[in-house]
Image (tube, rainbow, N blue to C red; front, side, top):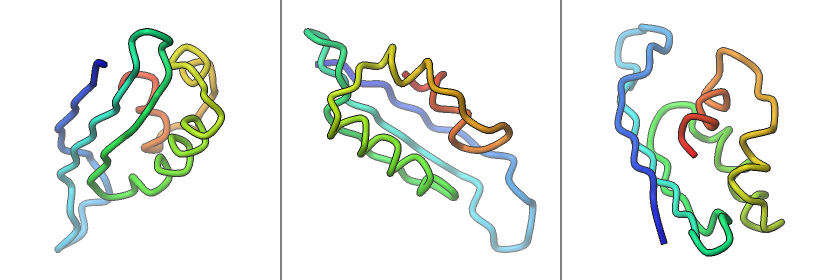
Length: 83
């Protein structure tokens, strides 16, 4: 089992009282390269929850998920660098 951990500051709309700190952990089974879990905390990470949930349910590998095209600039476009 391996995992990727990310902590960063996103440059989201700089509105007063808007959270910009984020953290993510994606758990990957190294024997078959499948995503088995994820922890996401931060603004706009809700869009990644469904993507990762579907990847887990369908048994997608990190390579398959990296090949998907995400709109830019969004949190989803960060997924390729997270895997």
